[in-house]
Length: 283
Ligand code: AMP
Image 1 (cartoon, rainbow, N blue to C red):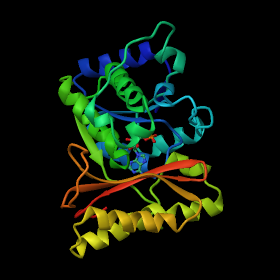
Image 2: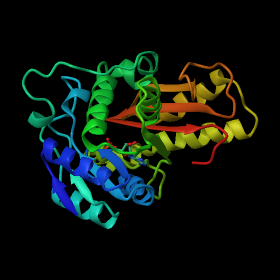
Image 3: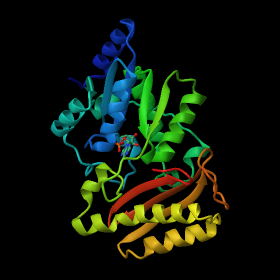
């Protein structure tokens, strides 16, 4: 496995791979890798001749009062995880190489970025679509893999790829969870032991809503009340949003259906966690 830090060198590598007739798979990450990332990498291994994982804590997707500086980083451990998962190249650029002085061009998807995380994190998705576009231009992948854990992000990237005619196949991968149901996340590292227990309220809410839905409940008002009440039982939890939305358009729905997205963002102490499920689907 090779580690490439320079943008120019990564582009050279990608150009040569393509010239040699090889397909390139890309897994973009912010590092502090866990089994969720590894699952994307293992799938990427099957889908490309060359597997690149990018590790870049992207400053433009963090708001001024967010956790950019505190975001956990451990390149040595990430290298080991990526290597076991079959990665050929880790692309780990420096922020100054990605955003040199004078940088001023951004990619912005519109409607899909307005609700949910877009509403509570202004500018977040503009940072995501911009960095993913840059990564696509640098790594030149044929296929790129993203997790459904960040459901809105996946929807936004699919939209961007379609709207801007990017010739890249986007693969959405299932949410990987701890044994007790907590969705794996680099931010779980922030949780103190008691908070780690409290964080289970997200999964409990998803399971409860899915159970009610499977039992025939279709009223979003009733489902929402149950979700809000359940999370409210944990005093340390504060809901950023708990919403039932159309999984394609992300528009709010009043009646739940197969394919309705239940998306949660909940603060446990200072840590903001997100999770989701699609009603009618196992996951
Ligand atoms: P991040 O490093 O948090 O930006 O995540 C990088 C990629 O891994 C994104 O496409 C995420 O959706 C995906 N990912 C993160 N956590 C999980 C998880 N628990 N299960 C599946 N994919 C995940």
